[in-house]
View 1 (cartoon, each protein chain N blue to C red):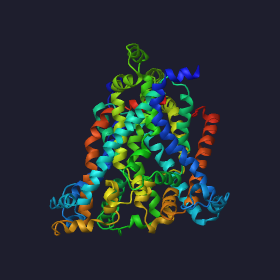
View 2: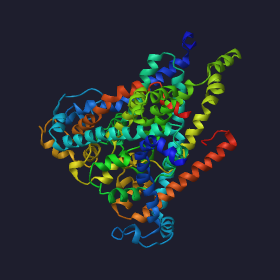
View 3: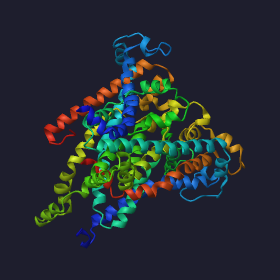
View 4: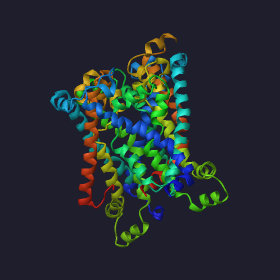
Length: 299
Length: 289
């Protein structure tokens, strides 16, 4: 019976086969390969003959002050990104939604989506140019008003703000799309009912629009929390230099430098596992809290 | 919408002004870089360039176009983008078509396994060791095969194929068309706008990809554009480029700016196409269902 079923639908199964093989080889085999976090992995011995050392690398992780610094930087940048970067596209979408001239709205959208399509290398190049102490426009302004130029990219104190602001600059427009889609789905009858009750525009925005897009907001926030330690390598690496390592080095850049360039394979795989487990705990935990207090959840 | 009938209020004016200022913030860095790339070195260094070129010159672009390494990395990236995107679309649409069909038993399990890889991604080092053991290090395959399917794009495409009217697929099969035929001559043409959009996403990702290349590629001849660009911008590779052109007008800064523009032009060129499909937000909206 089962055999016949496969025979009858063999074509369908053959269609998903390359994809299934892809996910097994490139997603699940490396996941199993994470076992090297529990070994003293040696490139010459390989995964089968390297000796097991239990939780040694996880112990080391929490013993190194270096790791705490990197973890702290990651948490702080991520926190600032959520606090300032998450509400920004929601507010922007609400404001865009209030624009009545369609042509104007479209033009604005075209312009604000654009930075999303630039690579982080390009965005890094733009930031370096704008902040240059010699000819950057920001320092020209400071000079104009009689201030000393600031070496923004060499001051540890500015690094996190630069990352957060340039991240918002690149993604805020693009992130409005999903909220605008949610806004477009709001039932117009609700607005009419609110108008009959004498509600003004602000009132309607607070009592009708916001609650209607709340499910989208909550789901995206939960997903964002799951990625808490995943800041993305490229953006930070592009602007990172030895002078700002104290505030700018994050888990992803640390894994690249210590793990890949420094060949500490087992230790940095342990960090990778730590990162994924924290992500899983955060998303499940946040989802439970959300279920209890807001009635919205991912699953 | 009935809203258009109302007179504009103070809020509307402030809102419109804010939007214009925001757009200016988004455009300003480009205009500044375009202007700088067309200006003389002294004008840039004296801070006289804003959004109009000062002491106009093409010399920075000449330096970029005379540089064989930039041409080479342009070629590498173009190849990876074209071949990679085709490969992405082939595998993604085949798998999405299969998983969208109710006849495929076990699809819920496969979906869960795919979603799991998004929540719990494999760490970097084991992925690197795998690519190394497959002998793909230092080859362009490493930039194409390990990123063949994006789980996110796959899920979007499944939801599109699910939205196709059942009757159409049914009638094709009654006419004796096999699954592959139905996929190629019915499912794909009917969802062409969304497949184009996903193809553009994949293409932009290939064009902008940097991390995969610095992990997997050691041979400078195989460096894609973004790696070359970063060397120029951050690691001051631009000095040798300056020697190729007249020194009195060119400058490191000007050459860097010209390279930024050259590397961005292809993106700006396809942007209207992406824009056309995306402006309504209809596509992302449909994933929520």
